[in-house]
Image 1 (cartoon, rainbow, N blue to C red):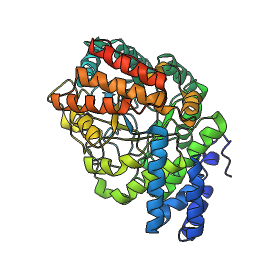
Image 2 (image 1 turned 60 degrees about the vertical axis):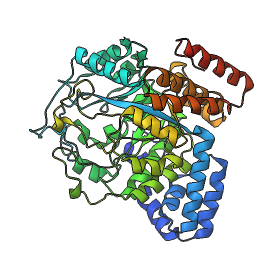
Image 3 (image 1 turned 90 degrees about the vertical axis):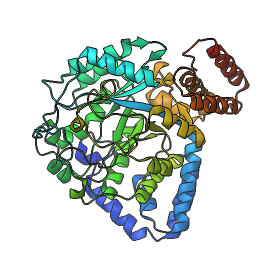
Image 4 (image 1 turned 30 degrees about the vertical axis):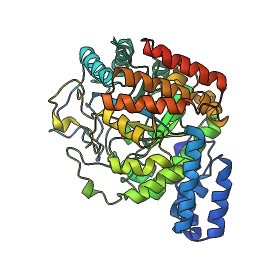
Length: 471
């Protein structure tokens, strides 16, 4: 039985409803009158249902597809402008008790180099990340209650926030750790985390249980209901994701939108972010063994339709994807990317890490400065902003800001000021020059005159060494 208000995983993620939605979309994908009606409806920027979205994704008409891309670009500009938020993952530990077939961390893998960072090693990693210019981290660990208990995670967060090196500071720590209890989510909230992120991997229960044969992650319901427990624990910014390539993309595309609808219905706010990683090679994992891989072109359409379906939700793409693929999807919905990433434990501070300790192969090996320069050249504004989190604009408060169209008077100024910080403190001479040109040009587009004047004042103050201005 499908019920988006239910707190049971198999009711708000209904196998019957997903299959019925896909069947309906397959039957109607060439009904251009219906397809165009849905595209027209999306002009109000209020999103689409999971059924409407899967119909747009399966439509094969070239003109309709171009209309979808155009609408996605329009919505992206309306809510996020040309800002792209930048972050980096920080791997604390790769000890894991789960048996996930697609992840090299699985406990039976005997050739991976197992490691857990000490607090001093975390300090070195954070300083290395600060020296690159990062302000926002995504904390990553395997699931191991002995080697990586919640107390270790909490201590690590405290360490990360405490480190001030030159002009560097990590201002937001997002956390991607295994599904846990309401009590532990409360502890994470008290520790000052930004977004709690948990990937579903796949919403297909039978396939999920096959891919997670052993360990706590095998429990489909406990994992799928984690976001509800996180919300109950006071975390109102949560991030969802599926790993495209593990299962049929149509099923998981519908599933993640149903999950978003459930969170909106029950908690009044949908996911803060949706991530769209694709399966990649890694130690003990061969992608060729998985038959559900999706092409770059299909991936581009998935991103575009997600943007149309959930206008207010951030979309994240990591360094799993190449520069070419990133260029394909950035205009159609992506709002956050990682840059200069390492997926090894201890990968930032050390020149010679164990190569087989990585969670997956990176496709974009460019430095953070190269990524920033590339974004600037392509008309984007790289943002290191963490202001909303630090000002308490999270959950429904952030969503109301986005829906009211106040991005250009708030997030855009913050993006420009944090870009100025990066330019002055970390950028190469070429990137510094280009960044200042972009900042000057973009600041003139801020609609509110008082905000615009204040931004120019703060930008001038930064020339004198002042930092950390925000709206």
